[in-house]
Every structure is written in structure tokens, then in C-alpha cells.
Image (cartoon, rainbow, N blue to C red; front, side, top):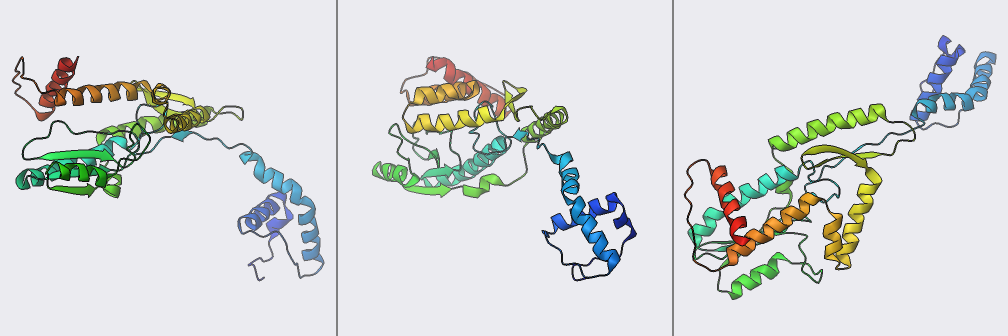
Length: 298
């Protein structure tokens, strides 16, 4: 026929008619003009009579939709979870880009404003040095009046300070590249938890969101996480920053406080009261530097 049907003995059985109903549904067909003799017309009439029951039988295994959420976002802006899949890899891309720009900034004695794709974290520069100044700002950065802090605005300030300034926007460069180990690990363990949640779900089970809190995999109500995230945005819009910080996860608050302390330490113009020497890997030196900054700021 025009739609590709032909005589089929299995159509005489309910299983055959069930398959025929499925084929019509997936092809968007809800009407048939049957041209044939007694057998074709009798079969068509039986098919129509069975149609409601066939649909119920097809739908019954899929009457309940199970939903489990995994947060994959470079913004890391979902509440009730400390970290999201992809955020750490994105920060790796930012570090690589800044490291690459640093050589040019140093050799040309220039200032660079690096804008990266994010909506939460804001990294501010420390004390400007004589040969290199790099300001890192996220595209969603705002001031205390909820006004956007644009890269060009920062550039204008640096130019007024007498610095030859360039703006670099990372954009979608952050979204690509090979995932770092942590993101591979996080996606794997959260994926296992998601499958377990699907297997144990019932029609009355609330949809969970798989996250991480204090280095432990968590399962919390998906709608609660979404509503809390929206509440954070509304609190920021209303300039209620204390409420916004309270609604975020504890890790966010502690990270923000550490960032504030280290930036303030860099801005303090004072002679060092103690000097530490550290031999070892770059990571170890960075760890000691961060510890000393936090200690001195407190």
C-alpha cells in the first residue's frame, strides 16, 4: 500500500495488532483509509475496536517518568551542591589562558583584562606590579548596586592609571578541551548514584538531584534545589546579599571568604614580619603561599 503495509498473518493476533498500533503512532498516523475485500475490512474494524486497549497496553509500561538530575554546568551556580560537572575543567582552561597571557603581559609591560564565562565567582587583582597587571573578571560580575561590571569599564580605569591595556574574552574556549581528572571522577560516581536512584524510584518518589557536599555524594530534592537557586537570583536582584550567601552551599561561602581574605592581604602595603622558603613542586609552593596569606590576613 501507499504507507507500506501488506498482508500479514500476525495481524490476526493481538501481539501483531499491538505492533501495528505502535508503528502508526511513531509515524504520526491517526487515520486509515482501507481499500480491500472482506478480510482487510474485517481486520480494519477489529483493529479500530481494539485501538483504545492497544494504546493503554502500549502506554502502561511508560505511565510514570522517572527523572534524576545531574548538574553539568561550567557556571557552578546550582544551590545545594558544592561543585558541578564541568566547572573544574573550565577553571583549568582559565588558568591555562591566564598563564599564556602572563608571558605577553610581562614582556610588553601591559595590563590585561581577562573575561571568562561564569556567573558566580569573581577574581580580583592583587597589588599591581610594575611590569604586569592581569585583571580576571567573569562576564556576570556585578557591583553592590547590581550593575554589570564590564571589561571595557575596567580597561578604562587601567588606562587612566597609565597602563597599556588589552581585553581578552575567553568565551567558548572554556567549554571545550579534555576533562580533568576530578570531572571524570565526579561524573562517574554521580552517574552510579543516578542509576541507583532510577532503579529504586517509585511513582511517588520525588525527583532527586545528585550533587556533592563536603566531598560526599548527595541526593536531594530536585525541585528544592531549583527553587533555592532561583531564590538566590532574586535575593541578589533585591540586593539582599546576606540572604543570597545564606542560600548558597557552605563551600561557596567559605571559598568566598578565603578569596576575600587573600585579596585583602595582597592589598596591604607592609613589610613582611616573617619569610618562608619552600622547595618542592609548584603545587606545594602555592599551598604554602595560600596558607600564609590566610594566616597573615587573620
